[in-house]
Image (cartoon, rainbow, N blue to C red; front, side):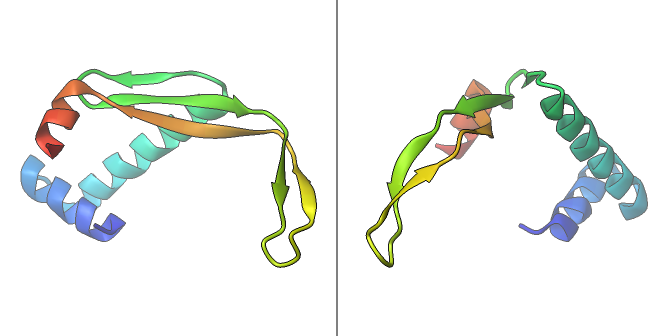
Amino acid sequence: MTKAELIGKMADDAGVTKIAAEKALNGFISAVSEALAAGDKITLVGFGTFDVAERSQREGRNPRTGEVISIPASKVVRFKAGNKLKEKVQ
């Protein structure tokens, strides 16, 4: 599903215009992004939890040459699905 398709589905489900649904989705994305950048954890009961994890430095291999390279430490976004979402998917 693309962002445009999601906006259309949200508008239909909520009975609002696509413009209002797009503003709501953009607001949600902005709020989640800002919270994660600040190191906060977002929990949406029944849907899931977004958080930021530290990934330590590690060694990898260049697939072309086989040369060992150092992959620097980084932060990654994690999502853990909630029970209601897991039940829907199964």
